[in-house]
Image 1 (tube, rainbow, N blue to C red):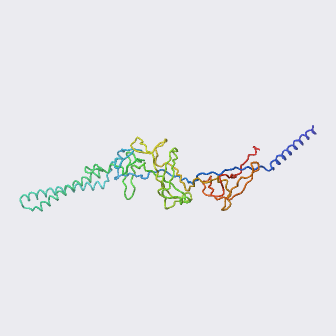
Image 2 (image 1 turned 120 degrees about the vertical axis):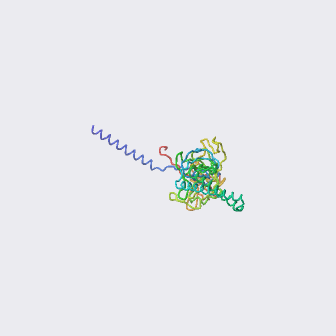
Image 3 (image 1 turned 90 degrees about the vertical axis):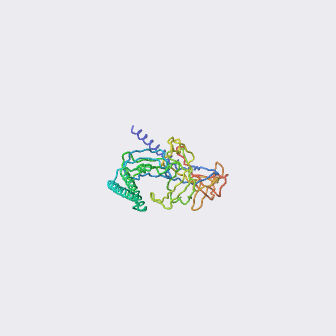
Length: 384
């Protein structure tokens, strides 16, 4: 039995050795190399760049109060349309005690002056009737009475404005009524009824009651790298697509290129603005015209991409750029020659032009009848 066992083990070792030798021998045999092949085509080639940015209204205004106080009433909501001068909110005034005291003191003083002016006028009028004073003195007393009455009315108005924010004489233009300064859509109302608000002054910007913008005049705002900004000019057309609304795209025209770069992730970026050409408007049922797509209206702040054509060549001879061999400043292609069974390749210099990253323009060296060798085709060993 031991003798048979040794023979079996020896046979197994021999088979493993032979199998390994055959496997290595097959691997060492030269394999046929296959290449992809291309036929030159006539097509348009464009070099484009994509800029990421946002959709914004050209004019976005913050409406602020003219006085400090508390929001007593809100007449509008975000998304609604307002016209210039239309009331958005009403403010209840909380009077400043120093100003209130000064206004009350002015009223008391005006009353004293008015009483004295009335007494003087009556006295002068009586003397004038008796021909004891001249017409000039009588007119002077009448003028002083008029001035005293005007001062009393002004003091009363000032007290009402300080105390209530409104007076009888300026009720239609009350500073307690917060009015829109432009016509457009209300984008945001960051305050609520009961919130305290302050007017803008030297020390602060004041409380924003509402943000209003014209949503029919939109712009694209983005940044472009310094390596590409030199190819742009004012008026350059671009195509805008909105990430949230893939079914909607707009034509736009470049209208601004920043003269100064900003640093972003270690690269110099230049801000650009483009005027969006809105082709279709549809009433949203709330009294304002906004642009609609199947996914809803355009909203301020939407992320968008702008595609800009930096260079273009129309109907030129082209091949895939992977078929080009670059050697220094020279470019070559390998022309397929010979029969189908025994292909040969002729290395030929060509003059290239514009490239879009996939296809490249061929200015000289190729014709439509040529066939060009492309990259090597990787053949899976399991297919052998």
